[in-house]
Amino acid sequence: MKLFIFGYGYSARAIARELSPECDWVAATTRSESKAEAMRADDVEAILFDGQTPSDQLKATLAEATHVLVSIAPGADGDPVLNSLLAELKAMPSLRWIGYLSTVGVYGDHKGVWVDEETECRPVSTRSVQRVAAEAAWQTLAAEIDVPLGIYRLAGIYGPGRNQMIKLDAGTCRAINKPGQMFNRIHVDDIALAVSIAARRRHKGILNVVDDEPAAPQEVVYFCADLMGLPRPQEQTFEEAEMTPMARSFYGENKRCSNIRLHELIGGVLRYPTYREAFTHMWQTDSWQAQS
Image (tube, rainbow, N blue to C red):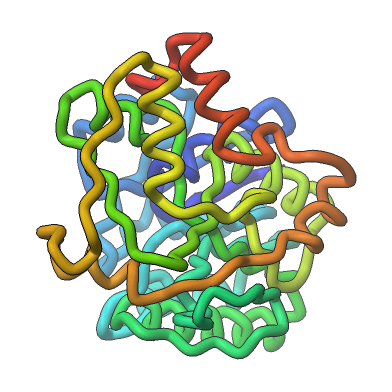
């Protein structure tokens, strides 16, 4: 396996770590030279890419890849990878699989009922509308070049360095209650588990990468506070809480996401089936504060 990753973010890094022992090489793009240094420490070939103008180094490395993982968000003009490298992607001689990291936000609002991969997408936010369009564009390319494409719709991502415990420790965590509101989550290590298996098997199709138990946001905050021995934050109603427009938009989408297909892919249980196992492990191992 020769793995090329567009966008070496939080989830992509975990996936790269999972797959690197099986790879001849891993290369990934970043916009930042300072981040490139950290990537090299991970034994990843770092390639600068501004999302518009691919370098000769990028094109040459991409041409040798067998597996491509896309972890760059689309914009108003569409998917930046497809916009700038469509011809190169079509001409890749050794390409055997494409993975695309999407979001369960594409489903939009379903009033708290269960959704699965066959459910109609009703995107609400601009970024979710853009995701639906990007998914379709990648499906068109994959069909044209006859390469398996896996689309992985991720729930709310958390893990070391990115979780409610950090805000509780800093005294900035809030417990916001919007009656009936439910979210799925997914620990970054379970994203790595799922996508690494998908890459090995050259999985094709759409997959919800979500945990086993959607829960109200304040329930997770209270569980973490109790685990840490801290007082529970005072509950705020959704109407009275001050939030950014982006944060508020998350509460406009209410659904429970099924992960039956995910379990079929991994052939067993998640590393962290619910937030309870995940936060308990992070607290007991003191791994919640930062990603090593």
